[in-house]
Length: 218
Image (tube, rainbow, N blue to C red):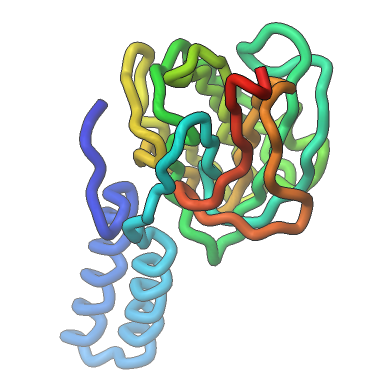
């Protein structure tokens, strides 16, 4: 997997460069209003694609949030993408003001990746997880547990970026991709994991612990 760029996600570099270039050209031509507008746009894009470092918690069996945002729901489901049997889904919604870089929820191996095209409904709606464009990543953690993290596109987000590939080993909290301009991440974990968050909680990617597994749980 290619290494990421920090503290600004590399996916934002073309947008930042273009808006800054247009602002400069407008300023040279003596067009102050357009120059200021593109300068403000450049500042917003720079803010959107920010990629701060995070303090990843240590400890065995921890599942950290793959995204900044707000927990939409924690629920048990009959089936999950790329997983066999019942699972528990923790959904995190990202608005346009959140950091949009996605991070690995566990330390482990990428076993499979499945991309599905779809619609672009608002990501906080229940139908979005079924009908929207999405990218599912199956991981096996250091204890042999399998879980899936699903990047789901939203109404404004039209570009899912996933730099991970099958066979990659990711550190807990390691950057693996992003979704441009607002969306959601669904994390499907085994039922024997202890969930530590609830709907309405705010999360920080790579820092907030969503769940914990131990041999006592299993």
